[in-house]
Amino acid sequence: MNCDLCGKTTESLAKAIIEGVNLDVCADCAKFGKVISAPKRPSPKEQHMQLQKREEKEKTELIVEDYPEIIKKKRESMGLTQKEFANRINEKEVIISKIETGAFAPPINLARKLEKFLGIKLVEEYKEDAFKSGRKSIEGFTLGDFIKIKK
Image 1 (cartoon, one colour):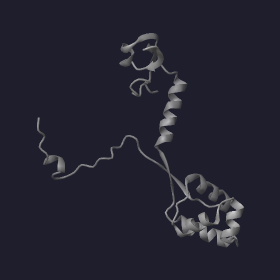
Image 2: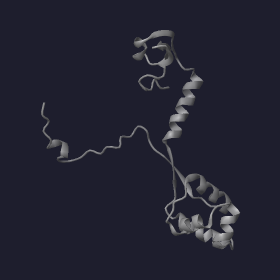
Image 3: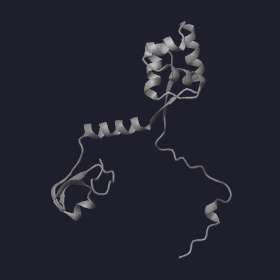
Image 4: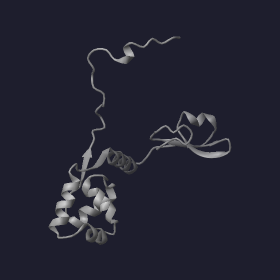
């Protein structure tokens, strides 16, 4: 949960009145007002739900790279023109044309709609590891090695 005053993410927030406003604040910000109720610890069920939300945030949905070919081949195998296909899924023909040429990547919700109608797989889910650092160790010098800071 986030502190209403500083925005810091913490597991326990206290209720406090700060300048006449009731806020949920962290222990650091509670000193700026009058504490109404002590910080409460989340129940094990709440902790589990918070963990699930964090895990959901780590999942990334991406559309497959060759989506234009997949969609076009499947539409043609069903014997539909772009206009007929667009009418059946309630989209504009221009959108279908741009998707099939690769000029427009469909948003996830439209890709899901296309998946359902055509019976194909367009959206892949990638799960990122939250504990890995995105930084690589760099051999040699960086720009930061050459900057002189005046004090």
